[in-house]
Length: 370
Image (cartoon, rainbow, N blue to C red; front, side, top):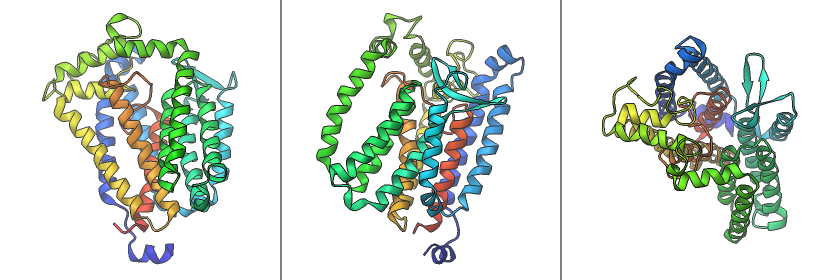
C-alpha cells in the first residue's frame, strides 16, 4: 500500500513546510532581537543565543528532512521501544546529580555543553505509542476497562513523572493532546465527563500541594497585588504588548528586553513580538499557527490508515495546544505555566523535537490524498 501510494504521489505537503519555515524564520529573528541585550550582559556576546538557536534550528531541519523520508508506519513497529526509552529518561532526570535544576524544575539532563529535556521526548513518544495501540485496538476503546482505562493509566503515569520535576505546563500539553487522540479514536463522552470531574479535583490537589501554584493563580487574578514578586512577569509582559499598538515599535526597538521582562527569548517571546511588530505582527504569528492547525488536520483526515490519522492528529494537536497555552499566558488570559512557543522560543530540545514531529507529519502527507 505504501509503495503504491508513494508512486502515485511522492511529494510532501509544501504548504505545511512553508508555514513551518516561516514560523522558524520569525523565531530566529525574534530570538536575536529579544536576547541580544541579555547575551551581551551575561556572555559578552550579543549573538550568543542567536548562534545556539541557529545551531538548534539547523540540527532540527536536518532531522526533519531525514525523518520526512522514513515511512511513518515504521514508528508503529518501534513504538513500544520508543516509549520505554522516554520513560527511562523521565526517571533519570529525577535522580540527583543527573537531572539539572533550572527555574525551580529538575527537567534537564546535561550532555557536554548542551542539555536535553526528557519531557519533550515523552510528548512525541507517547503520541506515537498511543496512536499505535489505539489503531490496533480501536474496537476496545468504547470499553472503559479494556480500552479507556489502560490509555488513561499510561498517560497519567507519564504525567505523574513530569509533575515530579515539577513541570505543570508540559504535563498539561501532554494530557490534553492525548485526550484529543483518545476522543477522536472513539471513546465514550460519558467517560470524559467522569474524567473531567476527577481532573478538576486533581488540579485543585496539585495547586494545594504547591503554594507557588496558588501564588500564580493569585498573581493571575490580580498581578498588582505583588508587582515585584509573582505578578512581575505578567505585568512586564503586558507592558510590552500594550505600547506595541497596531504597527509596533519596530524590529529591535523593544524597551522591555532591557532587563525588565526576564529571559524574553524564552516563554515570553510573544510579548516582544507584540511590542516590536504590534497587533499586525502578533496576528500574523497566530495566523501561521492557525494555518498549521488547518493543514495538519487536513493531512490527518486524508491519511490512508487509522494509525496515520491518529499520529498526525496527535502531532498537530500538541503544537496547537502548546501555542494556545503560551500565547494565552503572555496576554494574561491564563496563569503562568512555563512552556515554550513552538518554533519561536529559544531552546534546544523543544525546537529540535518539534521539527522532528513535523518531519513525521510531512511523511504522512506524502501518503495522504491532499
